Amino acid sequence: MKKLQILGTGCPKCQKLAELTEQAAKELGLEYEMIKVTDINEIMEFGVMMTPGLAVDGEVKVTGKLPSVEEIKKMLA
Image (cartoon, rainbow, N blue to C red; front, side):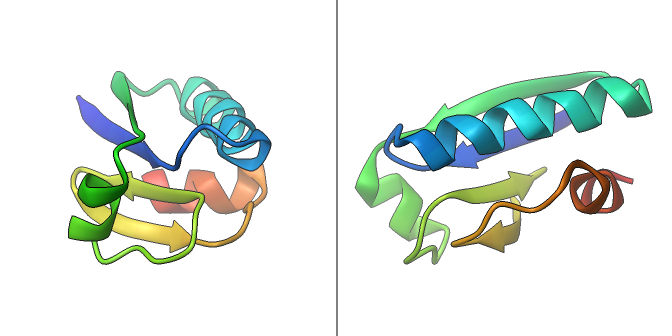
């Protein structure tokens, strides 16, 4: 099971990243758990200075931008 972490304070871009990530995971047929990390100190522990961010199994894959569903699929594969 993949652990998908959305790193952000809950802004519209963070919400959109969560939607896109969920769509990508479903299209790939992945078993996953999505966690929204909203605590700024926790986000900074990942080394993320710009949100939104996406971490897969604890590894940061993207920060500060909204990737496409296809880009997210590559990060999840």
